[in-house]
Image 1 (cartoon, rainbow, N blue to C red):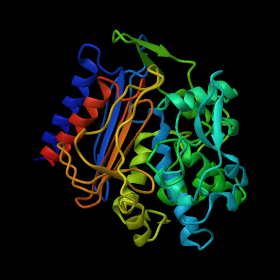
Image 2: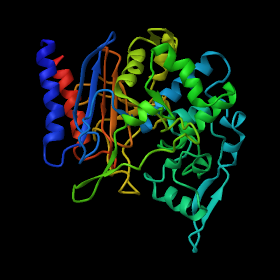
Image 3: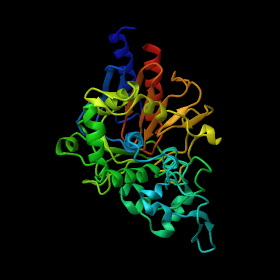
Length: 395
């Protein structure tokens, strides 16, 4: 198919997504090969009720699509021989060894805890097998936080990740604040904030500029507003809802703001075995290791999630019925998806309905960016699936 016909087809996906009743307020989507983006599009508005159009340089809260970037920074430490993935994380952040395993609640609603059967390793943090969770995906984590007065993770603060282990390390896959702790490991070993490490070791080699934990004035002026979707489907802009600025803590699990175009440069690095336009970020064998399914050898799978805070996330799963593992640090589909993505391809998402995939076999990647809560939105997530499907159908 010609580029013009492909662009027309993908433009239609975006326009239909924002134009349908109850659709997304605005979306930015891009697809890339190994050399360059072959599609860039935007539709809708940055905020409902205002004239500002969603554009390809709109800045989004990336939320958990931050995790893969932090994972790269940790793997750089592995490459340099400064850490091993089987090292206890407490060697580098002693506070993590203070965390206890939740053992239920007493009659007064107070949590009972015990010591974990083994220490949390760096590999546990990368694979989300430490036992750490998120309050919006775990009723028990939310109840523990409430009982102990622990702030929400979106406060982006150290107290917010000093929570409880929902199971012993290595016993299960539980998605949570693991990469925020990994970010602290990186900071302690590099002697600088995570954002500075990312800037020097990831952003500069890849030519990424419009991406940071603390937005500059230009980025702030281009930021899209997060919208809330009520149970009846009505969307309400939340212009004051943003991660703390300046950032209190550079959270490796959710803290970055950036444009979709900048994230595409990261995806291309993954497609090119670690090479960037201004320098190598990772060795080819390290990129391959990032994309290894670390759960398979443990007899574990990555699955769906149950919402404990409906305003932040719906209960859901990506491609139910498709077996899934986890790499360092993103989901891997163990079989081909209905959208056309081959087995073993990394993908993940961000809380405000951002989604990406990286198909290293075919040299294709994409990112679908909206700003809506709760997660797995009824319009945005199907739009992502339609976009990915259309990319494979028309390529």
